[in-house]
Image 1 (cartoon, rainbow, N blue to C red):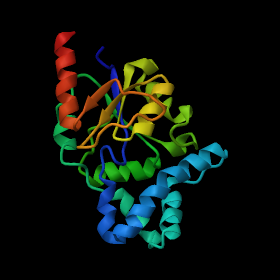
Image 2 (cartoon, rainbow, N blue to C red):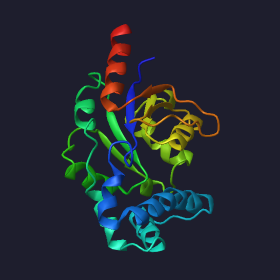
Image 3 (cartoon, rainbow, N blue to C red):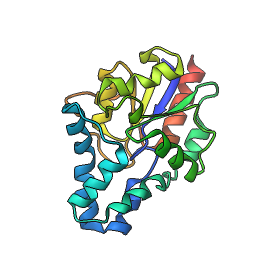
Image 4 (tube, one colour):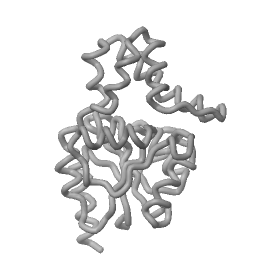
Length: 210
């Protein structure tokens, strides 16, 4: 079934977090990456919230890196396949970003990557003060896009995000970029694609088959 709307994860799906590696060093980046997302899980599980830039700053401190490097999170480059992939999405299907970031941070990230005007909505965790995989955050997408949850396709390069979106009633697409898929808690995506361009081709084929 062709999705009525598409929501994209930001970090690691549209934007390349590894661009921080040269700034903070290989060892620090590895530790930072291991701490960042689990920190958001712990906050949400404990019923607490701190904005994503502050979470990133603390993760950098914890791994001995300069916390000011967190400012570069709004300057991450988009993966090479993102701009042509977004341009190739089926006509008439609205696009959104659904991110653990802040509204202002996601807007800056999109603008700095030259992707302004590509998305109808930029949806972020600070709107509900909870992080993925909290269902309240996933619920922002169908609400903003005006469709039922099962009509939204959540696109992510993170297996745990696929699981969270599935449990929230959304359909899911996983972006591989050369990685093998490792199911998180046994949940498989509805669609697998190598990158955003590959996903766009698949969705156009679906649209033509309808």
